Image (tube, rainbow, N blue to C red; front, side, top):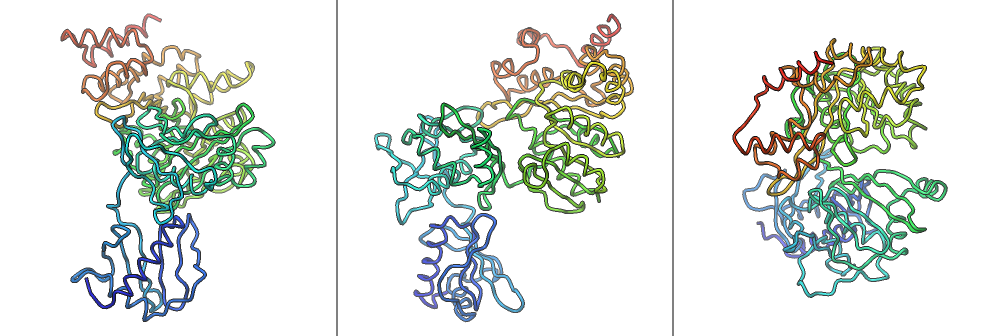
Length: 520
């Protein structure tokens, strides 16, 4: 590293401390203007004297290692590894500094619970997570500000791969990690604590909705680290929250393990494609990966309607517009109605939560669009029945006819704990063929499961079949697959037979399913 001036290095470290103390993800230095911090999605100027262009050049020389790429390099200081980039903006050098990718990650104790430092501890503010002795008394100061505490909670959640943070009076913060609930070793939260935490992140319009309705939902970005979807609600007269982490890094369908047939289905020119499963099963993540795949490969106009927006999609080959219910539009149904006048190719509906939205989604799919949607159902057969049953009895025959020609596929998924840590998805796949369309139209949906078993060559599979493979491949424990099974009694018999060396191949299963269909 160049040794031009120790004072320049000290100046860099001082500015970095200001940035990290203010939970900034980026420090920008440009000649002629004060230093700037990126906090959340905004760039904010520090209220100090502008930095000269010569000073910026001197800082770059002071921190750049010998022989490094002058545009992109890393260095180490008292704050840890720092990534630096130098950008030329209209002939002026701009120095951009961020925490290095090798910064210390959250640590875990022997029980696997993340240890949090929620205190505002001066020079170490914003550091996030630290290890602590088992006998150390850990307390969040009563006077600690909501923003400081929530920032440290979020930092620990991101670093620890936590899916959800639960905030409730009478308990410490509770993390859901790999599907399990892990209370953190901090002070028990009071009603004032939960209220302060809520106010630190909740927009005013949502606070008004909370006061009026007793609950509200919204999303926000935590710098460049992640986004969070938040549900705030009242319980026993106090505030509670659940914050779900939405990683900034978009995973591909292949990385998620989404079956190839799903990618083929969503490239069709029209039709209704549904992703279903219980809360927390990864429906939004699957849909986001498929939307991103279309965004990269096709010149479509994609409209998403969400409450709230979870994954941000930036236009690539496609043009993407994202509308948030409550902010950009009043309801899913209203957004769908308007979308038909906005020249869409693909429409994503975050949730088919009511009759009006379901009806609008089916109509949109009928008129030549690909429509994505989610439902809280646990099987493909149950999904079809749920849609039909949402309509009054006198309309169900017509809806069966419409659905039989518009629906192209259903993916029902569940998340399971992997042996050795992490989680893996199991999928049930329904590809709607003309034969299955006839079953829907003729009100014979009870035969759909058998039809799935006979359609394995088309990529179809029952959830229990995938669960059995995950057990057989030693990816998931027996009790876990049985807990998620649709027919646990049948699956345990199959597992016990397999332990004895008795297996049914796919052809045998398909033939048995065909016989069952013919007998009904």
